[in-house]
Image (cartoon, rainbow, N blue to C red; front, side, top):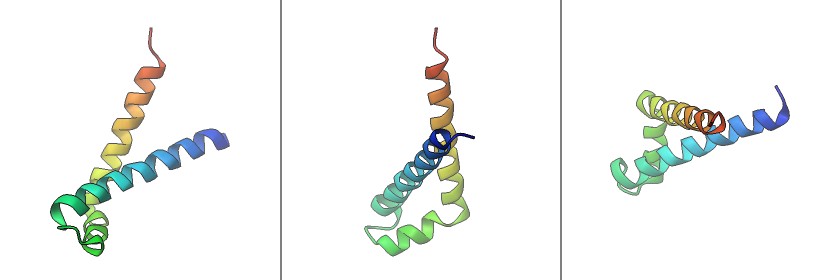
Length: 67
């Protein structure tokens, strides 16, 4: 695995985590950052992060394979 690919995957996962944390912070945690971290590290937050990561990977792959 090349460093470029590894960096791309790690960066995509970090951005997926940040997106889910922001959603938790703005909606469920009522602007409490500690509660947002707790909710993000719960199993449902981890599933949401992984799902967002995989959807982004699939979308990037399908755009790259274009006509």
